[in-house]
Length: 306
Image (cartoon, rainbow, N blue to C red; front, side):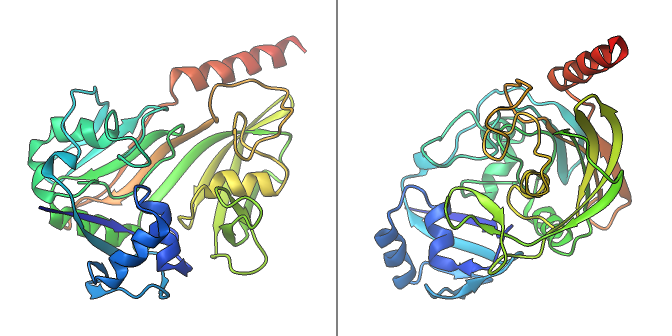
């Protein structure tokens, strides 16, 4: 029995075989090469070649041999549903919840939760039914889920064409100046640490993050960040690159931070998109979760005492 794994590329500019080795974590590099040689992998409905370059927005499909039981199963995990209609869900994802199975994790993910909430999603098949875009495990906030294939394709098109507006709330180390700005710096794989991304001088993909300072809180800056592109870890990488890393970031933050937080202070606060099929343009908002709100209140209290 075969299972179809389908996803849209969020961060292009590298060889297909290298990309697949990062996504198909249960397969060795040689096994990935064999899949390509067997012609079971397509890019934009065309049989793939190992050395071809992939670009953001490319649709990759893999026909993999596996038992049906290997597909994600419904699990009664509570969901904070901000909006729902016949075509999509807008969910306020809590920090700590992984979006989809992978890298040895086959349960306890957002996909398992939405399969229980929307049993019809099983018709989409694959390991990531309904998933249009992702959030890092420890980033909270808004994520949109498509309830049918037509909605999935339309929403993916909106992301590809930069028609979706996203606003994040972040707390940064240091006093960021000026109060408004645009970070325009290409992002690619860190040549020294392949599990990380970095601002690179060659081989990176264009990346732009606009920001606005909301408030200065002692040695910290509370900002709104608007990513104009969708690179992996973009906000975290950009602020770290200019010397103001996200507070609590274990990967890009300061090793000796003056602030202790169990996870990075990054929240997908606002999301604006067109409701499928061809509906109105809507803006959704997810309030700052309690753990992050508590941090702000503590800093404000300390600032008043100073």
